[in-house]
Amino acid sequence: MKTFSDLNEFNSTVIDFEGKTLKTTQDPYIDGVSGERPHYKATAVDAENNEYILVWDVYDEYEEITDESEMCDWYNPIGVTLVK
Image (cartoon, rainbow, N blue to C red; front, side, top):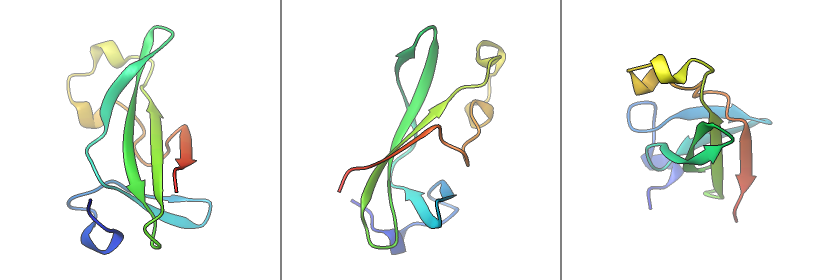
């Protein structure tokens, strides 16, 4: 797994959450459906290499979006869970 220092804005989604910088260690992927709408998940790490799971909700008009980079507000996940 990549560490915090291996990641940057060119190979990761970098977000600020509650005073911490989190960097995704994988590309976000569609994981299930919440009601009728899909959501995305990805793992991330902080500066101490603690692992997190990030979850994003898709925009209301997701069925019309063809560019996946515009599917969610990537800098504002709806869920952040500390794994370890």
